[in-house]
Length: 356
Image (cartoon, rainbow, N blue to C red; front, side):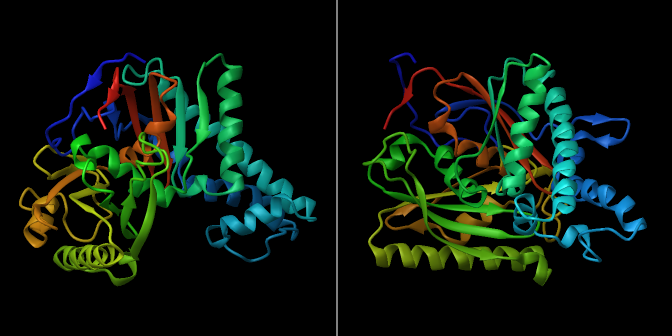
């Protein structure tokens, strides 16, 4: 990489296309075919549907090794154990499901790679909850083999960190470089259709200036889908979680930055509103009258002795940002997050190194 230094003195806009380490070429890209959104073909729901299809003929003959258990209720841990277990028929069903899913993942990835925004992508990181399993890792590896057999020169690799941690750690790369000079941690929020997770993220810059050793020190998790709160109550609960974490970080002696990085589903506008894609969140988050970053600043105006800054971006993109330190040997790379849908973002590394 070149020796020039990137100077970052300002706070980025919400949903920015230019961040301290990367240019964002595309995110939340919605590709369609005759059956609907392509991403739905490589979601965790699609994997369960494929598993169900492989079980149907066995169920008719009374030989379904999974018995009456619903495909959607079989945990990833159970499926991983079956892969290496003694029940060869059950193992064969899981392997067949992985193969079919990998073919779909390869198909969807192929379509992304053929778009202008994803042209010349050298590496794709795969995250999301599905990745956190042996069957997910096998599906990713198989999809890469399929693409390479078709002469696509692209790597597909599982995300380095646990996807839950990655969704928080990525928020570090939304922050301007100067904020780390006097602080050793930030607050991060990862909002999903089922859970809201908040955490204190340690930078560990002394061990690794590129933030490759960053970690989640402590987090709080709320499964809001169980409570079905209003939007206002969801924000109140989120604020309480953040204030609790601030108190714990101060008690532990952390030098918490006056910064909150927020990962949220959908297309994030520069003013902090959400244009689309937040339909699974509690209440109407796409209203032009609702602004989560502004609500957080109003509720937590200062952290320590400084005014609070909040930056919000797409959740799949933020998860991908956790990989920035590990992507410095390529120029163009992307992220796919396999969850309820297929989150996606494509990045181009900026020339030079961010000033630390």
